[in-house]
Structure formats: C-alpha cells, structure tokens
Length: 237
Ligand SMILES: Nc1ncnc2c1ncn2[C@@H]1O[C@H](COP(=O)(O)OP(=O)(O)OP(=O)(O)O)[C@@H](O)[C@H]1O
Image (tube, rainbow, N blue to C red; front, side, top):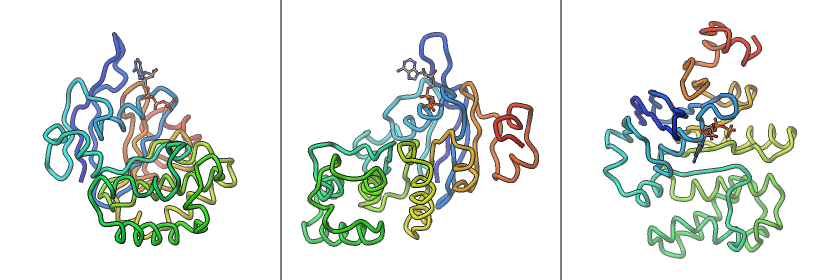
C-alpha cells in the first residue's frame, strides 16, 4: 500500500508538483496521466527518492520512505523507464541479476529466477548473453521489466515504459506484459501521456495538469463524469 499526502516540489518559483495526495492499494495499477510537464515523472521519482520532495509524506506499507536509506528502498521498489533503461555494457543475464546480486542471492537461485523470467516474458534464451544494443526495442522493454521484477518487489514504478515502441509493438507488448500473473499481484504506478494506454491498463487514473491532480478515479468515472472541461478535452469524451 502506497499513501502519498500533500506532496510538493518546486524548482525556483514554479511548483512542478503541487500538494498531490493519492493512495494505491496492494495489487492495484494507478496510472499518472497528463500533459507534458504536468509533474508526472517528478511525482514518480519522489516515490523511490530519486527526487526528494519539499514537503509532504510518502508511506509504503505504513513506513515513511525517508526512514529507509534510498538504496534499500530502491531494492524494494522496481523501476522501469522508457527503452528499458539498461546499462549498455551489461549483458541481459547481468542486467537481470543486478538486484539479486546486491541482495546476495546464490548463483543457482539467480539462474533459476532468470530462466523463469525469460520464459514468462517470452524472450529467447539466446538473448541472455547479448548486450542491449543487439536487442529489438520490444526485447529491451521486456528485459527492463525482467530486471525490475527479478526479486519480486511489492511495488513497481514505470515511466513511459512503452514510449520507445512503435504503436503496433506497443499495444502487443503492453497486453502481453500486463497479462502476466506476477504483475497482476504487484502494486504498479505507471506514468504515461497516452490516453488509450491509461484506459487499458489502469485500475484507477490520476489525471495531472500543472502539478496537480485534476481528477482521480476509475477510468469509467473520468470518461463518464469528467470533473471539468480540461478532463473532457484531454480524454476527448
Ligand atoms: N531538475 C529540474 N529543474 C528545473 N525544472 C525541472 C526539473 N525537473 C523537472 N522540471 C520541470 O518540472 C516540470 C514537470 O516535469 P516532469 O518531468 O515531472 O513532467 P512530466 O509530466 O513527467 O512531463 P513529460 O511527460 O514531458 O515527461 C516541467 O516543467 C519540467 O521542465
């Protein structure tokens, strides 16, 4: 369970995140949707302390995230970014093993989990010894997800995870990935500016504009009862 209360972040005179509050239930997928520059990425990065808020509180299963050091926290929170966010000099196998290694897993356990993930994500075994440059965009995306899920973190944050893919591959990959039972048990916060993607993946949507949440609710709530003209225009309903 993630609970965010009155979160704010300024850069100079501009409040890029302005008093944002929301909660995400275990296993739920919350999509932060909004225009470019509305504060989605900044909000997401405050959840795993890549950015420190100016004010407000973030609790993960009841514990304030500031009470944990950032590296420990990030091992409990998977993070997936556009194009996978893979290091160019790590092979796929090394990338997936990153967090398990940090946690001191035995090599056999790492190998078993890696095999399980590539099977579930339908990656050919041959990719394990390849570098990101030698993968397709869709494969890089899957490897990024495999790396994030390796130690079964209870929470996974995703920032435009399908942004680098062409529209066809994008639809295909996201359907496949979100069909994974593992991901269905995980609490996910996903950032996108793509309305169709939000409507397809979200249990709930928080629509952001100018650093604030304009409306939060079930996809059907936003489309059937838009809170104002901005929501109506953005969703084109
Ligand atoms: N380090 C920074 N210094 C100054 N301004 C910043 C910094 N990081 C972000 N901003 C500004 O904060 C605002 C919100 O940025 P953010 O990346 O959170 O938006 P976003 O909704 O994720 O947009 P996009 O979809 O384009 O990534 C933008 O106007 C951005 O220029």
